[in-house]
Image (cartoon, rainbow, N blue to C red; front, side):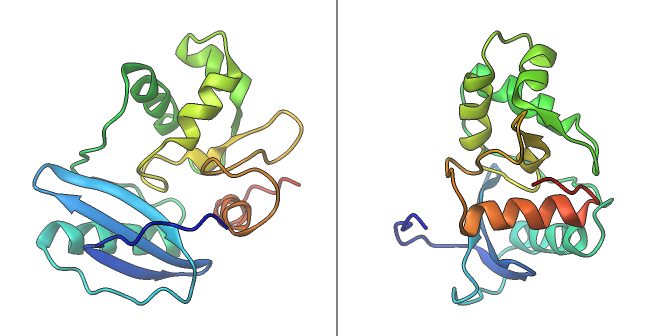
Amino acid sequence: MRKLAPRVYNAVIDAPFGKVGIVTSADGVREIHYLPASTPGVAPDSALAELASAQIARYLDDASASFDLPLASPGTAFQRRVWDGICSIGAGAVLTYGELAQRVGSISARAVGQACGSNYLPIVIPCHRVVAASGIGGFNHHGGDGFFRDVKRWLLAHEGVRIR
């Protein structure tokens, strides 16, 4: 697993696969990170961190739960177009990188994959619903098996999707 630089989280909540770290700003939820179970929990330190924590916890209990959070994520115009396309994929459904590329008007499945990996708000922008044509694909700019791929498998299984 890639080592993350120390971060100050506005909340760190338990998840079935480890922990979820939440970073907020005055503009909205800025980042969400998948963290190992050994990461210490952090009680929400603001109303927005509490709201984000509650909505993520609700999704972790019920895959059909939706999100209504102010988002303050950076990104290029292309990344935002891909992220908007990802948000149109319903719980329990998946698209391949190529299918999403067609949907957002891109000629490159690889570019879509890079935009998926650069998603600052996984779960809320459900990039786990984008898979490779030949299987589960990478996750969070991580290929191969390991923690992040296990998180993607859990999220997909939570929504009723089974992919090798």
